[in-house]
Image 1 (cartoon, helix red, strand yellow):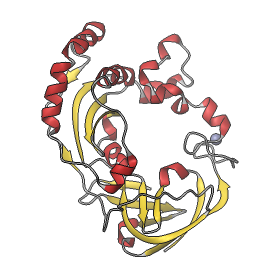
Image 2: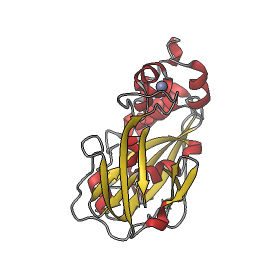
Image 3: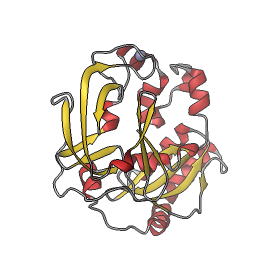
Amino acid sequence: MSIEPATPARYTLRAGEARLPLNDYLGKPLSLRWTGAIACTHCGRPSKKSFGQGYCYPCFKRLAQCDSCIMKPELCHFHEGTCREPEWGERFCFQPHIVYLANASGLKVGITRANQMPTRWLDQGAVQALPIIAVDSRQQSGFVEVLFKNEVSDRTNWRAMLKNDTAEIDLATERDRLLDTLAPGLEELHERFGQDAIRVLDEPAQRFTYPVLEYPTKVVSHNLDKTPEIEGVLMGIKGQYLMLDSGVINLRKYTGYEIELMA
Ligand SMILES: [Zn+2]
């Protein structure tokens, strides 16, 4: 499933060669059936299980993009010469990264590659986002995020996100407050990486809306591993979730699963 910025966000589901404009299916019945097959999204080989959301076990153990330092960039070990794929690291980790504040289920901090904005925020179901700091590498963004995590969560409560249970936040005010509180820690990072490496941004906040007819009041989730066939009326799409009137499903979780879709 891909998401494009629009008002509301525009969702497209890839099904073989076909591209389904999912927004058009709002209010209509949908059924999804997992055939039982899983193919690795990297090498295409069949796999009994999906590791790291879409990989076979050998790829999961071998690829740099599946290494623990992707989730915890401050643990980047490229400089020790142990990067699983140094060329991949150079292409994706030694690139400008952004530390941002977002609101999907309350205030959170996160990081993203600069060219992944605004996709990253739409992926999370954020309704507001504000880039606050630009850095030169993924690892530096990790150090900044670790600092901000002293004051702000880095998690989204997906149930609250799906219920749209969040109030408007003045992200610019939060940014100024956090920069002030965390000034000593930022100064340490400046001393370590140089004044130019960590740059405070002054950008406008962004807002996002999603194609939703009605938010659920109680969130029940479908699990294709337990129930391979699900159906319901599509009530909305937010983040990586389809909201059916019978329950929600996180499509990202089933990356690599062979699914038959009937609309
Ligand atoms: Zn593989």
